[in-house]
Length: 182
Image (cartoon, rainbow, N blue to C red; front, side, top):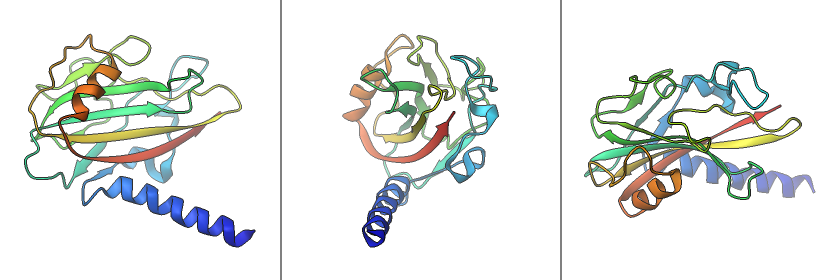
């Protein structure tokens, strides 16, 4: 039985690594070291008392022909039947490779040209994790390299609509998965 768990863990690790590397396209974040959120990044609502400050993330190794990026944070474990979108930033210019600490939390902190999309609370910007008490959730942070400079959406678009348009323009994506429990 221990060998079976080892083999499963080994192959699960390979899947996570392949998602994070994606052919040289990678995401890094010192704020999410060890695959966990700090209190500063957790929500200040839904019964949590964190700072709700978006983590600093950076990325590199995108494919040639990248004209913009899309950044998302999604919780597939949310008890909604459809997951929960915590953060969506569209139309990041190709010259941008970093979102600084708090860039998604404060109006005007995103790079010029980038657009904050509404999260699943209906508000534009970052919403930190806050799973129900006694639960551990995965938060998938994705940076997609796109072959167009802008998606045909405005700031009132839902995350699903943004994802629909991005799907057809995606050259590559890199992901990291971060856990949070309470």
